[in-house]
Length: 311
Image (cartoon, rainbow, N blue to C red):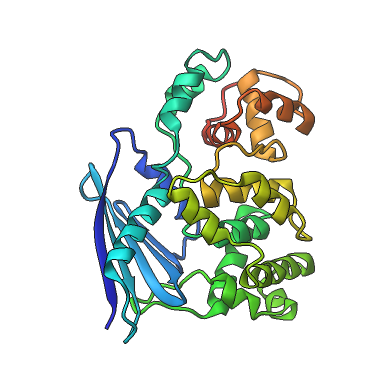
C-alpha cells in the first residue's frame, strides 16, 4: 500500500506562479517533472523510496500538495511526514525567503528600484533536494542549457527509479555513490564531471557532507552554516565558487551567495547600468558586495530582467 500525505500551503498575493512552474519545466519531455498550467508533478526519492510530489494551484490562494510514496508494506509516521511535507513544500515554493525585507531595502536604490518594482514578488524556486540542486549545477557547467537538460534526462533514466504513476525520480546521493565514472561517461558527462558527481555521492553517503541535516536545521530556525557548506564543497575537485553559490541558492534558499562569475548576471548588470563595455567579474563582485545579504537574490532579479532597447 502506498503512503499518501495531503496538505495545503497558503500563498501570498504576490506569489509568481509562472516563475515556479517555469523553473521545473526545463525538460520538454517532462520525464521527471510534469508541468501544466496549474500543476507540477515531480518525481523524487523519499527515504530511499520512489515518490511523487504534486503541487496543484487550482485555488489561487493556496497550493494543494500531495506526496505519494511507493512505501509497500513499510509503515511511515504520518504525523512526522505531514510536518516534513509542509516544510518541504514551503521551501520549494520559496516562501521562506525574506523578499519583503529585501524589497523595502532596495526601494530607494538608485539602480535597482525600477527593476525590483517591475519584478516585485520574485522568489527563487528551489530544487526538490539539495543534492539535485548541486548535481544540476555541476551538469550545467560550461555547456548550454539544452545540452545540460539532455544529460540530466539520461542521468535520471540511468538511475532507473520510476514511481508507480510513471514519472521518473531524480536519483539520490546513495544511488549515485554506487556508480562509477565509466557508468556516467556514456550519458554525456565529461570525465571531470563524472568523477565529481560520483565522489560527491560517496562523500554524502559517508556522512561527511550532511546536506539534508543542514537544510532540516535551517527549516527549524537554526542559522544556515553557509560558510561551512561552502568550505566543504569547494574542497571537492570539480566544484568551484559559482557551483557552490548556485547550489546554496537553489538548494538551501540562501540569498547571499555572490554569483559574479555568472555570464548572464554580468551581461544583465551591464544592461541595468547602461554601460557600453562588458562588466568584469571583479567589477560585478564589488557591485554585488554592497547588496549583502541579498546578493544572490539580486542575481535572480538580473536573470529575470528583459533586454532593454538599445542593447
